[in-house]
Image (cartoon, rainbow, N blue to C red; front, side):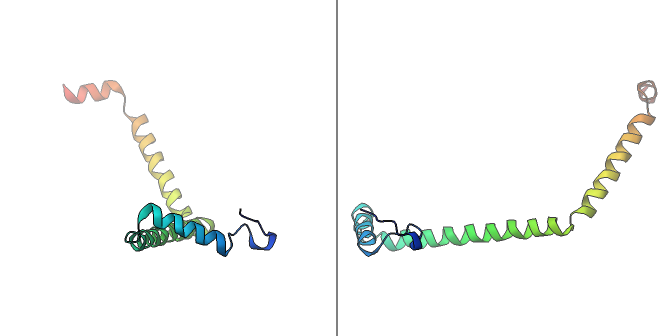
Length: 97
């Protein structure tokens, strides 16, 4: 039975953790527990690294560092539109004849 203590935020106590550890040893075996813990730690590290990268990108967007690249993107689309409107299909066909 897991008793939720308001100040603990739903954390399991000592006896509950002992039962969970016993079940883990029975399921995975004593030899695989260190490998499982190591891979879990590596996964948590990768998750933390990815989260920090996303937070950094969001800060850059928030600070307006990306606004300059969006302005250059608008200029390129205007150039493409002006080139497309200046040539007609007849001129295009006459170039190949």
